[in-house]
Length: 582
Image (cartoon, rainbow, N blue to C red; front, top):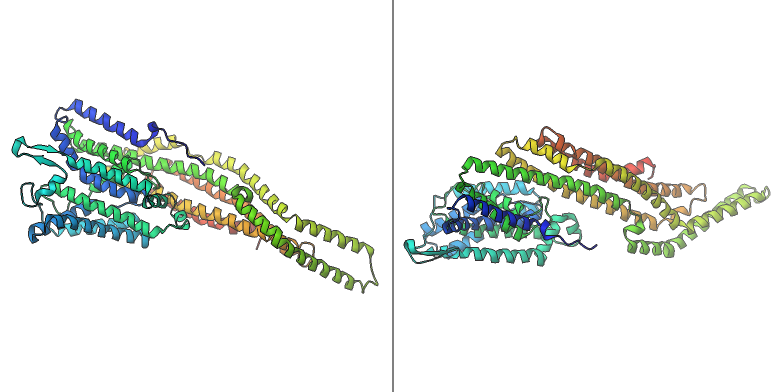
């Protein structure tokens, strides 16, 4: 299927770029101080570490995870390395390398906890966040060497200073390195195996594993990359901060993660752009730098941050509702497909096997069954002494009918699934019509409830809404397993069809054939049950926007998702129970 080319006007990166231009224009008009070169330098200085953290965390977020340890980790690495420089005479170059090693080590730890031990990303990185914050608190306030001191050369990596005093000229060459890093990681994301596998894991982890991707290894590597960029951020943080303070760093990850989402990374994973992260971070930095210049104090900045969080929560939940609508339509198409329509290559292979291998075996079984019945019939009539000519015509007719059934097994089986397809197609129209979620209406109700919440509550709800979106990945895996497993079972059962149908002509053996036909009906109408349970799920999801307790509704949604996954796996046994198939 060809992918429709996306218009640049609808590209979120382009929209965010327009927002940057608009904010810059507004702040420049409202404040002449904002237009000064020193303001630009200051904003760029404090954007470097945010951007480096954001580039790194883009990769875990694309996989559907998160890293909450980047803020405290960055400060911790800067404190430890700075202490080694000040108290133990470690060269600055070695201290910079130490920051990278610490970042990679913590990133690898996160990767093992999440990718190998299967801990939830939120929980695993929250633990390492607390560990790094505690480790940083063990150090004292640490200033790295100043620009004019021995070892202060590392400041010039981010800001080149020519001259001294007030007449010195300062150039933000760090911005050039940031642009080069962004372009490099954009290339890595879109044009290397590592990047493609990262996106594949975020899109559908189970499908990625089935396609041969070493999911555990690449999951670990994603967090190693995030740790590497956190180490780079620690160097940038030390370069622009006069003294690195212990116990700080908590909350800095929110700027980085917020910038990533503003830049267009999907809340449920599977899509993202490093260039989008780049422009998203500068929206955050423009707001943090520009709002004080137009007279908005910290409380107003929190209000605006809350508005941004409300937009993020609504975006996450809107994406969830839209995904539910999409999934219901996709399931109707998947389970309503006939064996031939699902995969013509497998269909032709199974048909050839059935006709060339199984039908001859079924013919031998049929010959044995009908011969056995003829012998029984003769012996029951006192070895032809009490013969009735009609019973021979009856036997010939039954044999002819049995041969006709065996030789037309394929058409009979396909007829069962064609009938099931008609039932699914008709039910799909009813279910989709009754479960389609009115996103605009629900979002309006949600926004009213969210505006009444505190900033802390909004932050917590934002994380919860993010993880509710991630539950849709679990749903996708279950749907994949159930629909693909059902179709493979259909092909396997269909291939052996002539053998059980060969027994229908005999009273003693026909139970095998009858049970086979019941199994076909159960497999065919399992698709209808799948549509029903997914329709019930879609109706339950609608309650999120209507509930007074949003927190309870969101956790209820996660519970509904687990329940749905359980019910999807039960549809096969329920269908067999209805048709009494064994």
